[in-house]
Length: 293
Picture 1 (tube, helix red, strand yellow):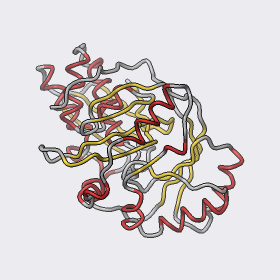
Picture 2 (picture 1 turned 180 degrees about the vertical axis):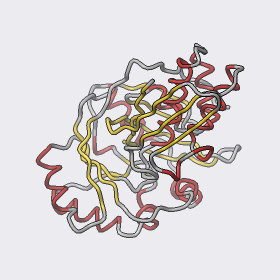
Picture 3 (picture 1 turned 90 degrees about the vertical axis):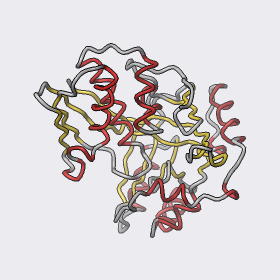
Picture 4 (picture 1 turned 180 degrees about the horizontal axis):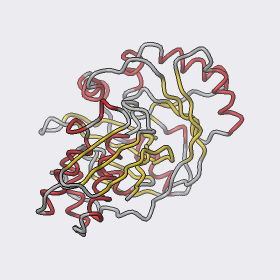
């Protein structure tokens, strides 16, 4: 069995405050793109997870946890050999690991013939990680709670995006570190995201409402990110947006010509550019919104 695990962009990401469970309350609009990892699943006498990035082999991979948690939920042993082919750059704020986990849940539910109700599949996703839930929906969605309460939104399928991924040494526990640096001055009421949702519901996408609470922190954490932003902005006349906790950047509603300009502007910098498109909701199972727990 072969399945794809698409990346995502955060068109808006606000943090409302710290929750009693230690997580942060978020409001974020996420949109899938067609840059995707690939998972292949075949029968096996034990659980095996292999990746073409050797650092992501075995139990350290979130796919392993997804398989174990789903098997527990289904009352069976986690017997499968899963091969993961990475296409989404790691630790970029593009949700690659979470998407891999969601794809594994959906595929293994079929592979093991569990046929779990969507509510149970969603509950498993919530236990694995906050962003995993979104990828059960796909397309575009508003995520709230700690990121696991999902409300679908109209997707602008096929919008071209110039995606920029800075290269260089990563930051250990990047997302936790950046969340840990938030203070009350970074918190908001979610109003920008609400207005973006209204725009999307009206069949539009107001790019002036794209917002990311982590932008100033990412500029401090990732050496050279500001230089890349300045190079892109100087070349095309508009500033790229940050996805997730970064350091990936994107130009929404781009064009092939603009993308080629970006590629030229990045020559001499440690960054890789991808020309991608947004995705609508696929035929894979989707999870209804469910309570935070």
